[in-house]
Image (cartoon, rainbow, N blue to C red; front, side):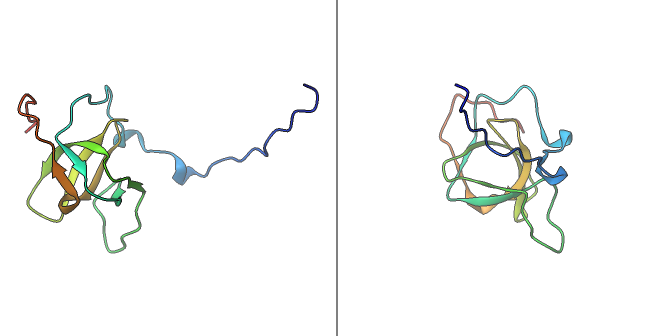
Length: 102
C-alpha cells in the first residue's frame, strides 16, 4: 500500500473542544425526555446573542436535570454532554420505571 492517500490534517480550534464542566461521567443510561425536532444547545445560559454551541438532532434522548419554569432547561445527553436548551423543544418519555433525578 505505498500509494495510500492521506487526507490533509486539520487542527481544530479551541472552540471545537467541549469544556470539561459540560461533560458528565458516567454517562446516563436512562432518559426522561427526547428532543422533538432539531434544536440548538448552549454550554451556558444564552446571553444577549444566541450563538449556539451545537445542535441536538430530532429524537435525541436526554435527562432533564433542571427547569426553573423559564424558556431554557439544563439537560444531559447519552454522551454525557451537559448543556442548556429550549424546554419547549422537549417531549417527556413515558417511562414509569425511571426515578426522576429531581
